Amino acid sequence: MLTIILKILSILGILLLVLLGVALLIILLVLFVPVTYRVRADRQEAVPEQMLPPPLIHIAAKADWLLGALRVRFGYPDPGTVTVKLLCFTLFDSGKEKAETPKRTKKRTKPEKRTKTEKRPETADKTRAEKRSEAEKAASPGGQTKAEEAVTAKTQSKRSEYREAESDSKKENTPKQSLLEKIRYTFQKIYAKIKEIWENFTYYREVLMCDDTRGLVNHALKRLGRILKSIRPRKLRADIRFGTGSPDTTGYAFGIYGMFCSWLGKQVVLTPDFERAVLVGELDAAGHITVFKLLWHGLILVTDRRIRALMDKLERTY
Image (tube, rainbow, N blue to C red):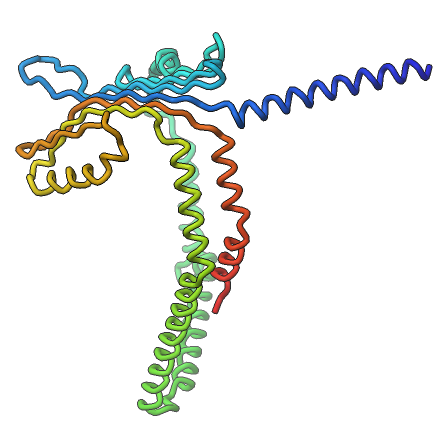
């Protein structure tokens, strides 16, 4: 009996170890296997001679994970579909869903015609209520029903109470203070409010301009730069002709491109058009994203003690 129990426990232990190993393998794959992506886009000029010009913008984007086991595709304007596939199985296809959902036709039902002799129950109830109210009015000496008499009595009592309260308030609101004292009181309130605002402003300015906050900002910018560097395209090729319609703004935009042209590389070419507003060309970008790098830099930034200290200082009311 003991040997059987030990065998069962050993089997369960092996199964737990296998499950833990599979879970650990999945976590490592998600963290360290990169997601590759590629985006292709081109914009053409419209041809006015053709009756049906081609679409101006074409976009094709794809993302693969685990050597293409999980694939995501996006195409525009064909007609703007998104597909997600796992191995040979289609998990999501926006094109099929649009085709499978037929248009619902609403059938209008004609209302049944009623004969002249038939009366609606609502109208019959209304006539009965009107007759009762007329009978009550005739029975009462003032020509009012009991409900109306009760309402009038309530309104009269409320009016008398309101008049009494108004008279008391007028008695209480007699000018006990002079006009100069009221003006001084208002100026004191305004001065106290301005002083409170100025003290809060100086407090938060000192918090934001201290050395810890400056170091935190530099650290956050450094981590953000590393995150952007990890997800930026490794391959970038572009041939774009642009123009804003104004020579001066086109020159400013081209000057900004000249500042970053060495960082963008030789395969990115921008040609200015100083005569008209235009934006045509081709773009091809490819790269990969690793989840571990994003989580690593994010955790280092979140767990910084200076963030907690800054949040405590900002939440404090002066």
